[in-house]
Image (spheres, rainbow, N blue to C red):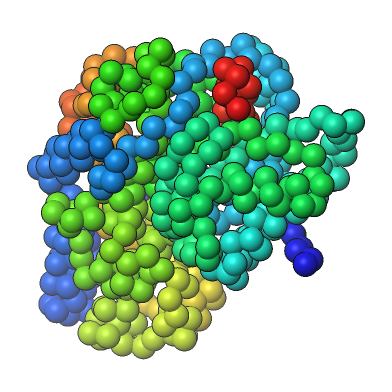
Length: 481
Ligand code: ADP
Ligand code: MG
């Protein structure tokens, strides 16, 4: 079988500030329109009270997950126990399968907290995501092979290059380089994988193609992000992803992990929370009809409820559902629709970043997206203001719900009271205007102003790739794999 892999160029989009719109300043075309927007504001706003309630509920979920397997927040033991201090040296490969892209990274640890990386990104074809699992893993192996050629990385004799595999789906880990897939998420549904070991599939694909690579560690991107951030910031207690999906990992005391029956010689272990699954019972999250519509049409209905309210894959689609509803009620674009916006997933989350940042009086950037990209014949300023308002509601809600999860961890660990750091990776966090400040503002509402001084939240760029290499190193160092 031939598998082709085409590199995608990385786009560098500078992060802009949000240029907020106050819905009370919009010149509405009718009372009906005004009330419709006010109702949306009401529905999408996460009050301080609700933020606290969600945080408390989340904390309860964390505790349940630490007690036994199979709980809603899975709290997966990562088998990563060692700590890094930035002195480690060596060269490793990382394969990062996040959801949207696949990246191969060669990571050179120089010591002194210095890391050099070279990487190539490949887009994962939609057909591969839902086809035969073997084809998907063959594609991964081919990307690694091409990368080795491209960067002229040669292996002599029988030696193999050690690779850290960031496989960012819920995996029940059974060893540092072994685990079983619990469920697919983020639009993936390749057949024959659930219950199987992704490392075995990948190693098999390497072996069949005689690619001299050994999968030394299986890592979730949140765990990788934590490790990568800790290489430079030893006070790091948490790694978070706001990318295609959303999830977090944190450092837990082994004595707190009641369900852990393994080696307890170390004090701490990183827990991959799989927090995207939070509130599958629908007890607390304020789901709207727009969330429910998106959920029902997703490949994994009723699953990953929190993730679907906060992650990059879904925010554009929720926004699209709100806009369609306004159009159907003739409260937007005079009831006119464009063929593009009528299709699912056409309203990209990246458009939301542009619309949020649009500070021009006539909202020209927003006009470009609506008229040039989404092919609306014409739009008025009133239309564009309402679109901006909807985007803002969906984006701010995402940041605040994400903050509720962070707050759960900060409260559980007590880390908000002392100097600590959280590393965050993912394009949504990186590019969405004010996502970072919205999160910190919400944390201040929960904990008071000290949290701003104590907890440094920073972008862990490339966290998921570098972290996998660090994990491969830890595995080798501890003789685990
Ligand atoms: P992965 O999660 O696959 O590792 P990323 O971290 O790059 O990948 O996240 C991809 C997600 O980020 C996509 O769902 C996409 O919608 C979203 N995204 C990409 N660019 C932007 C942007 N400029 N603003 C907001 N979201 C973005
Ligand atoms: Mg990623």
